[in-house]
Image (cartoon, rainbow, N blue to C red; front, top):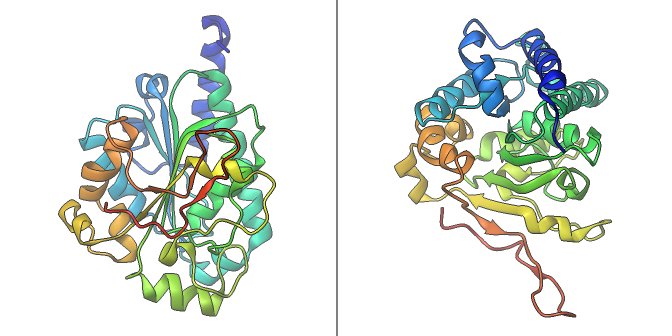
Length: 285
């Protein structure tokens, strides 16, 4: 589907207005210029608490690596006043926020249907990204999704969200992230209300029952390992969002130069073969 120049211009302006209204910080003009919006869109969500340090570090790294798309920090949290538990447990509000994000992304895709769109969510923000995908029309597709230390239960069914992903969903997790992704979510719960370790610690597992298992062929899981130290990630919760990691590891994914991780599901080549379950595979980085 293509959009004529006369129609694209007002739609692009409308999309830009929505992004600016959502708030991008004092330097939003640098990352939401018309030229950048015409090149593509990256939407980045931070974790609970509303501090958005990681999203700003990440944005700087992507920019330094030459990602020329618009980079929008979508501020979904209640803010420092709500602290961590409020963001984790207010599931009705979080779902409503995800609906708003879905409308924001859909508006941009309608204006610029041939431009690459990447959604990046860290920790609690990863859950909001997944729920936004679920809320989007199936006809609205994004190119890539990157879930960094997702604060969802490992058994969460991603298949509905994956219907809106054209190429890849990358899930990045660290067994060293024990304080927040194990103890924290076991005590206070994951974003989907499960008192368990989160996928940010252990990755996702293929669900026992799902409407569309084949969607999981789009998922690549990246387990933190010592090789990632070279990219500036020491294994902790915020390591996924450092400027160096974004520049050296995440940006090549967005630029189409890297496809890391292990597939959760390998679709069969010969007719009649069952899909291969790779849920226990581990990435070499």
